[in-house]
Amino acid sequence: MVTAVTEGIKVCVEVTYQAEFSSPHQHHYVFTYKVTIENKSQFTYQLLRRKWEIFDAAENPKIIEGNGVVGQQPILEPGESHTYVSGCNLKSGLGKMKGVFTMEKLFDGKLINVEVPEFQMIANIFHN
Image 1: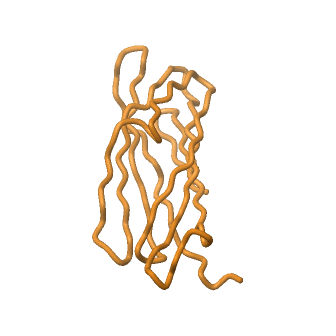
Image 2: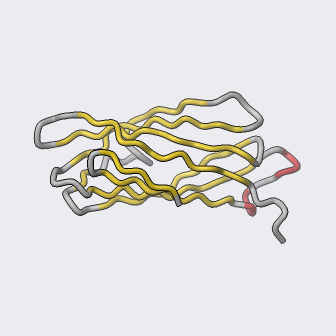
């Protein structure tokens, strides 16, 4: 698990290789990642947008942007957290991701870019 904190917003990411959904002989590797966003600040924030940088050893880097996370734009009061699971497909068994969540402080409308720490995606293809 990797963790980063930006202005009191803590982001933790845990990644899992999904061997049962992967086909290494067809260059198809599936990973899921669980993201927990915890508001440790004294303000209420809403997650508006996400931006991911995806690095795959077999391809050029990709940038993925969009509103919210898995169709949601959660509002986090102080002390609250939001957890979601998403996935990424790679053509190699080796990659990494990092990103930014754009969040709005509802008190004054200030936007902040919250770091999503870089995490590794490594296929465990040699495990029985």
